[in-house]
Amino acid sequence: MRNTIFIFCLIFLFSITSVLAQNPDSNKPLKITADESLEWHRNEKYFKAKKNIRASQGQTTLLSDILTAKYREDKGKAISIHTIQADGNVEIISPESKAYGDKAIYNIDKGYAVMTGNNLRLVSDDQNVTARDKFKYWINQNRLEAIGKAKAVRLGDTLEADKIIAIFKKNKQGKQALETLEAIGNVIITTPDEVLTGDKAIYKTTTDIAQLQGNVEITRGPNIVNGDKAQVNLKTNVSKIFGNSKQNGRVRAIFYPNSETKPKAKSE
Image (cartoon, rainbow, N blue to C red; front, side, top):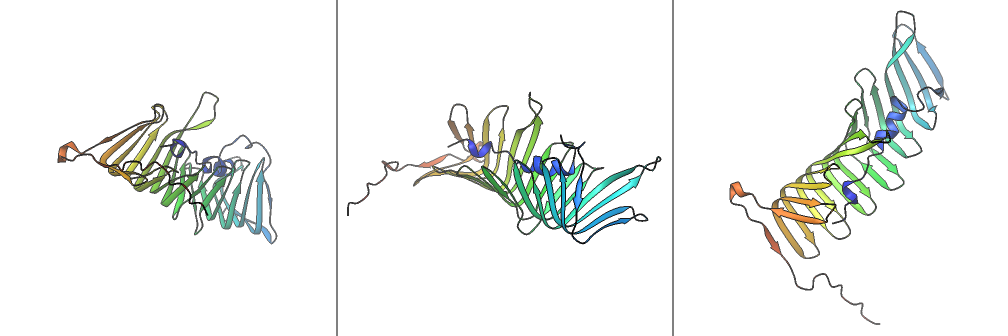
């Protein structure tokens, strides 16, 4: 099994938070343009921009039909924005990727961002991530979730699950790097050579080991291996399949001789 499917990085982390949270461009001017209007509701304490919104800061741009920024006034009358909401045809564009949805909300006080939409997706040079329900990100925890028929496609490999969770940490260079990747519910991992299914999968960069749990099945051509757990060491490329000892479960396998040999093309 190739290891790339376990090491993909959900670039949504960097794209949405570069607009909605602290980022290297946070001290640069935030420029907002709108075709229809830019409203300042002083009594309710919010700004609203309407129609063909373009908000740019540094190398990141947010596009939407409507943009609302709620704020509070500090003692010195300084304006402090606590919630940002973009509605309608939302695009978040950064040098690394583009994220698309119908709605994006960032609660600055809680450090929590969510993006939803009927065609929710994240596109970068080498991967495409989609979800039916939402993308959620907890900034303080560096935790990102893709929820509802989540699917990640990268370099010919595909990871599908009800929920995909990625946790990041800063590496020695001070950049965010993947620490743990978890897939929960109806997990399907498809590579050019194999299909792996199970109830849950988890990969940790500290050990470089991927584990599948619950109703595990690995198919390679006509060959099938079943068990309760599977462990894949991505350093040694060694896989282990385990049965459920508590329930007297056994590992089962069916191998077909010469199944790896591809049939020769017939001459015309």
